[in-house]
Length: 223
Image (cartoon, rainbow, N blue to C red; front, side):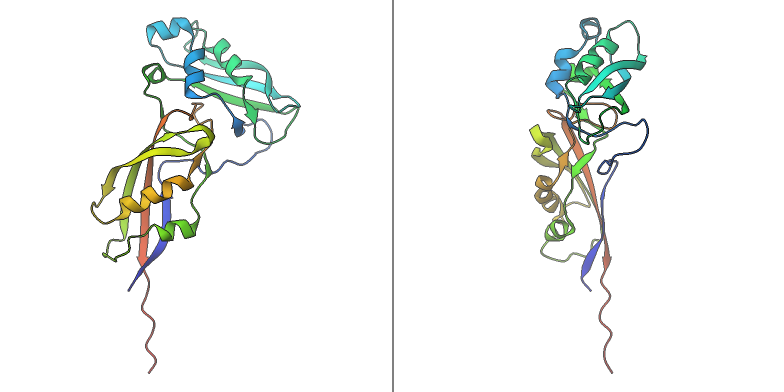
């Protein structure tokens, strides 16, 4: 019996975003990078190494830039995170025309950015491999393994492409799926703003991929 693909699971990740009705958090075609968030980090919070989070409510202008943003939540207060978040939001571009709509924008200030250790933990995938790409990544020799988990470590570049990927984990090891997963890395593209309001461009990302395979039943013999 030969294995066939049952599922390719991108573990712990959001799928491709789609627009929703009413007030919501949209996708963005343009958003601040890690370097831009670091540059906008409030001076007092930067000096203290404090992380913060802001939830903005904004209106989408005719140019698809958020405008008239105001903080609904700001944690902690008195560090200037709300003002910094508003300035960052002005540079963003909503990926779907929706002039006049009210939207929410989460903005996460993680102190790890100040140390050059920014990591994407809740990505939104703009593109993912096609089934043909996944099938082409299978090891050339059959080995009887039907459940494999591979974790890749990569960096997110401009445009959301992944670069510098390496195999951080392969379980079980030595079956060839790690090399296969590496061949898929170029097929992924990350949206510029993560689910939790963090920048992705310039950050590191761990990409967990699980191959779930089932054996293909042998053809019935004709009497």
